[in-house]
Length: 123
Image (cartoon, rainbow, N blue to C red):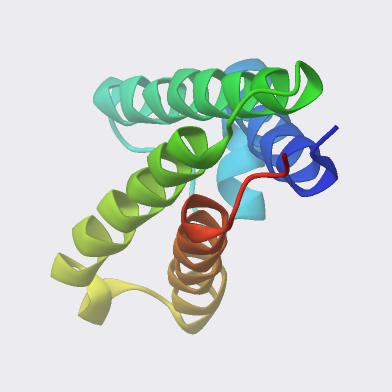
């Protein structure tokens, strides 16, 4: 069993579920201090939840079944890269905590995704 993939997938899956079950709390955990202003913000929070639950669940599932997990690590890192690139456009408007937690978390996720996608699978 691929323990790092189970852990990475489990964390991403749990984060996704949190965005689906309680998007306001999840949003606060990622550095947002104000509630969303428009209903479309909830759409984005839920979309992130579905995305993260799907990628995380499939990463963990592949690891538990002994399958190659590199593609799911790449998908996970790619999702974080998209979040990071999207955040750059609004970087100057983010608070210090949003930059540290949101942007920093995306950087860590990109690193984990690259690491997982480029490592040798166990034989």
